Image 1 (cartoon, chains in turn yellow, cyan):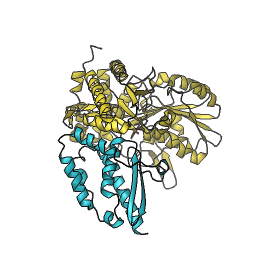
Image 2 (spheres, helix red, strand yellow; image 1 turned 90 degrees about the horizontal axis):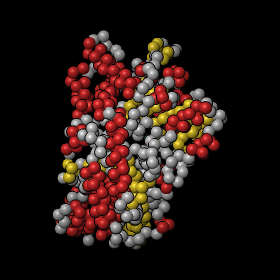
Image 3 (cartoon, helix red, strand yellow; image 1 turned 60 degrees about the vertical axis):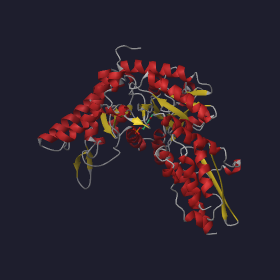
Image 4 (spheres, chains in turn cyan, orange; image 1 turned 135 degrees about the vertical axis):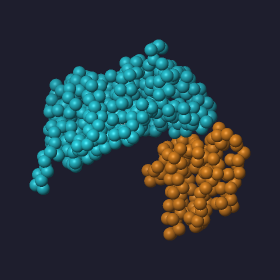
Length: 407
Length: 138
Ligand SMILES: Cc1ncc(COP(=O)(O)O)c(C=O)c1O
């Protein structure tokens, strides 16, 4: 175990971890849905409302200045953390879903009937619907990268469907249902050689390891703060300046215009063009704080610690008779999606809850993946750096009890 | 027995148990009493929306009373369906329409069933009432 990683003191940073569920200590294994929030991020939100709450980019007064500086400072933190070239390439959004809609809507007018969009077969529903809406307008075609038996993307098939008709390739970095890390470096490289632009959904990856967007040379990238120890309803979209400039904004409103008459409006420059209306100011500032917090612990430390949690959990769960893990591949984040023979995932989740253990059950908004495995759903336990080996032991023992109750 | 009395009986049965494990074991036991449902009846039409696990509910009017058949893939849900049918099966549409369902709070299940899952339950109850409305018009 990594000695520089003091999980007990890290856990002190999370007030929610002292909560009891049905009189048992909370064991939070639903980090992939939403991460828990450290006290410094909570304090940051409080601080904003107590000390400098005011609208940004508009006032001449000091408070507005202070809020604007904090907001723009958060943009710089995102830029530095993801090694983005310029801060104007960072658009604050309400989250991954919003970001994807900005891109799909922006390309709606640019794409034509003969064009094609490729998405992966490992996608969250929120990643499929915006494109289905878009192709209703432009009649472009949506193609899907199929999965291999083990749940990994079939890269040979990807190369087959990629052609000079392909304009956009879109997939998640890490699958929320299985935790598989997709080979995005290779996908970006091949797509670029074919002249396609690539949008990566980093909702499930950004919390688990360091990501360098310039090195990846990806065209668009997005993540949500609430999976990164930040608040809900905030996220960002990164886009290369040249591409963002070509896209029409999704929303019209205040902040995003430079000149308005009744006959014509000129859009503001980046990033304001995509940030219509008063944004989630406190949320954005707290998002910046959350990034600071993750960096204080160090994403490399987090990655290494979570790897050890995953390995331990994998070996424990595999001791359980009739337990089957889906997407059990080499390149994974700390997430295990599984079923136990003859027991419905809902029943497992309901009883685990009685032991204070929070897991996700069901289809994980990814029905095509469930169909691929011919199942109705799974139990998903997603670990993060706030979890411990002891919690995994408790999980293992609880699963044994669940099994004896239900079979 | 009236619907109200049937609910009272269930509440009384649950009073015997002092911890959740026993309550759950009882629910799992009850799931085994559920009359089996024909595969053909597990159709898209009979599927209830709003439940986390698949739940099918089918109803027929026989001699003025509603005959329900229901099933679920999840055993806990199945047990809860079994309780529901104990209360509502073989009732006239009017009996169902003038009834209230309050046993959930009283058996201490509400605190144990998360809103999501409780929603599943209220969807089932709603569907039972829908059938009652439909049959009361025929
Ligand atoms: C892979 C993936 N993409 C997109 C989303 C949607 O994120 P948000 O709800 O923050 O917009 C999620 C959240 O569950 C996700 O896991």
